[in-house]
Image (cartoon, rainbow, N blue to C red; front, top):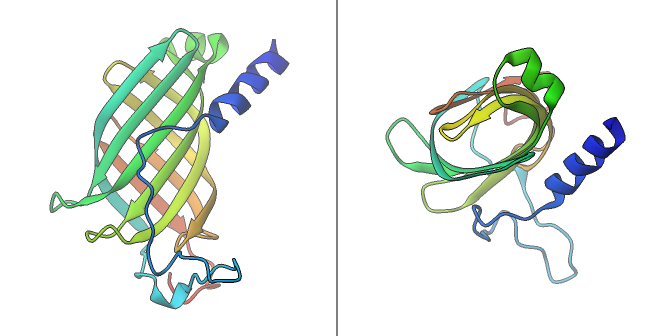
Amino acid sequence: MIVFSFVICILISLKSTDAIPLLESERSKPSEDGQSNFNMANCPVIGSIMSLTLKADEISDLGNVYNYDGVVFHDDDKEAGYLAVGCQRSSFITDLYGKNAGTCSFELLLIEPDDTFIGTLIAVGSAIFDENGISARVTITGGDGCLLGKIGHIDIGYNRLNAYFMHLGLSSNT
């Protein structure tokens, strides 16, 4: 049963979603030889806490598979990016929490107001979910762009997303 759940989680994490549009910017365009031209010096300064409003775009609950697509906004209501979540319902975790819950993979894409790519964060962890949204505290496991190398966690409530970053003094854009 554990192996089956693990395989399903991997398959869910590979599923493409339509929530995130393809964005291309000067920061992320490959050069003519195919190498990345990404320049961290052009990145905005990212503090220890990033607090965003979260609004659901599409939620689907297909038995053991739960998907959430949402849009994130800055406090001034300017669009900040997109959140896509894929979950595998776990009977063990559901019984433990007394609510629908399971193991989830989170993909957060951040953009600037002019649609310039900032970066993505990937996080995984257990979450509670229903027809209204998702609630979790998950560990950041990866990222790219201006968020490459970020360490920390993300707290997600039904209408709020807070990312907390640890700063180790390794980057000039912390």
